[in-house]
Amino acid sequence: MAAGSFACLFIPVFLVAFFSLSAWSDYSPVWRDPLFALAMIALLVICLVTSAVIEFKTVKRDNALEDGKERCSSELARLAADVSFLDLYASQGKEGEEARARVAELADLAGGWPSDTTKRIFADIDGKRVEAAERHKLEPVNNELRDYLTSGYFEYAFFSSDDFVRNVCEKRLDEMLMQLGGFIEPDLKDQIDRAYEKRETGDSVQQEFAIRNESLNQSLKEIVDSAEYQHAVWDHDLKSMAAVLEKARPILEELGENADREMASKVSKLEHLWKTASAREKRTRHENEAILAQERSAREHMERERNQRENELAKANAERTRQAAELARLNTTRAQEAKELAEVYSERDRQKKELEKVLATKEALHGELISKTAAVEKAAKHTKELEKKVRELQQKSGIGTPTHEDIDREMAKLDAMDGWAFESYCADLFKAAGYQQVQVTSGSGDQGIDVIAIKNGIKYGIQCKNYSHPVGNKAVQEAYAGKSFHRCHIAVVLTNNTFLPSAVDLAQSTEVVLWDRNMLRKLVGRYLSVS
Image (tube, rainbow, N blue to C red; front, top):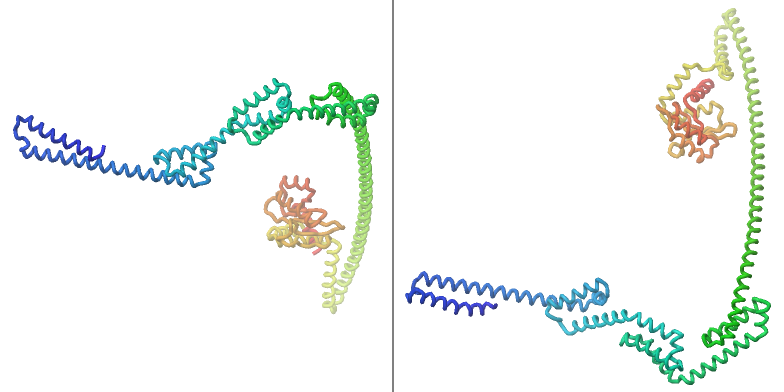
């Protein structure tokens, strides 16, 4: 209710109440009472204020509704110009349903369409969508009509001279057209129109059709009565059968049900004979191919066995040659070592004899020194020279072997060395032991090998480990890797300590030689004996 209407209704009610109260008070001038007058005035003011507030809220609500309608109209106009939204609006999925519900809600809130253009845009889309849905719904009927029009039965029944057959065909066609209404495909409609136009000249077409069938049946009869057909049937010659069937099949396919039954039966009989003979020939060919495949497989198997035996024989000959060469090399090495050993023994005997001779000379000189005091200084000097020579001969002959105390002192010095000093010391040990071309590899690029030495043509790669605890698997792995990198024949791990059992197992599997502290002591002893 508007505020003005409320005020117009309230003022008469207020006056009626005022005069009623005046009459109720026995015609006493109650309205003359100041308190009563103030109460009436206050009541009137309250009513007027209430009326003004209601009027303000009503106007505000109306303005909000108008603004909402304008926003909804603007949104509808914007959506009508949005191509992507229109595509979504026209779609058939869940998103399309949501878009259409949104447009309907906006139109309802706006109190109608903002313009005829907007309404026409959405109406056209709705019409196309409904039409597309209807076309999609009737698509099976269109497909059925298309199959019916392209079937041989329609060609036969629609142009049949039998009225009953023609009426049945037209009735079926009318039923499908009635289902489709105005949603028939244009090409189908054109095909139906052409069929009706063609049927208007049905007599001539039927006559031409009959003449064509008669001509084709005559051609088929000539093929069946030909000598080639008789030869194919009696001799079961596949080539003749195939030639006759190649001529007869197109005619039978073109005639269809209008073919002469007797001629068609003879052609079918010939085709059955041809299929049987072809299957028999194919089976025989497959059997022959299987036999040939078995023979080929047997020959290949025999060839593989022969090649395998030849390879094994070649490997055996190569192994025998290698073993013979290895035996010859070992015999040569053994003979060389025996020769060197004989030379060593001969040299030692010679040195012993020379030492005995020197000792005898020393004793003679010593006696002469006692008897001849005048030549003391000369004899002393000569004696020192002889002693020096004796020490040299002792070192060469091995008579001056170091003691255990000497080796222990040298081992203690060795344990206190750092890595580089230990590697250099080990290189000196191998030089003293008779190894040639001894060299220390570079520290960062040694690839697991610290010292390389050669003896008797065998190249050794030595990994030197100066540890205060037993050596583990890592040193063995490094030596094994360095062996391939430096192209060594034998990889060795030399340490001043012992090896863990796991390192020993790994060395056995990788053929890495392990030299512990005992072997190092032997090398140190030999080194001290020649230094």
